[in-house]
Image (cartoon, rainbow, N blue to C red):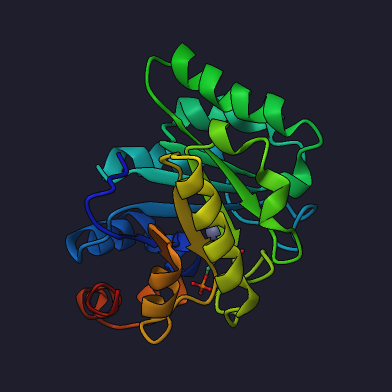
Length: 227
Ligand code: DX5
Ligand code: ZN
């Protein structure tokens, strides 16, 4: 499970070698990763296609790290049960994709309870969506994911406006004495992670910064050292 004991590094397998996924996940686990971030894209909500519950099911067999499933898909309610059954530990949906966000978040909780385990509820917002829009749903979220790029692709540049959104969200969480994790996704590198951590982030997704290196121990080590 996730922990508040230290900052968490969550390599995104979007930048891994998909033909050797088990090896790649084992390698980042050995290199000190805390969470495995799984980017699910449907070609509708975002202009890219990736993977579904079948891959999560196989990943569950090869790692003990929490599987953090980031659903960049329209109508996620249709698939939440399948992701829970496959072994997801956290399911994050997009606010922009859910007209009945409260119902969707409860569905994640209920499917987890049905499966006899705690599945964390996550809500993500795109760069143009204000954090204030989460005011009502915040107490029901175990995690909020702030996108610091437009979702769809790895290797994009960090959008600086995300920093102030993190600060505002941190204030909302602390003022209301909630224990919500704040996660950031997109353009995180060793040279900006400290600044982002200072704004109040708990969980750092990093795709290209981890996998576009020859030595994952070095790339994850650099992120951990900087944070
Ligand atoms: C983008 C995905 C990210 C992506 C991050 O839509 O949600 O998780 O893999 O990649 P980097 O760290 O390379 O920006
Ligand atoms: Zn992601």
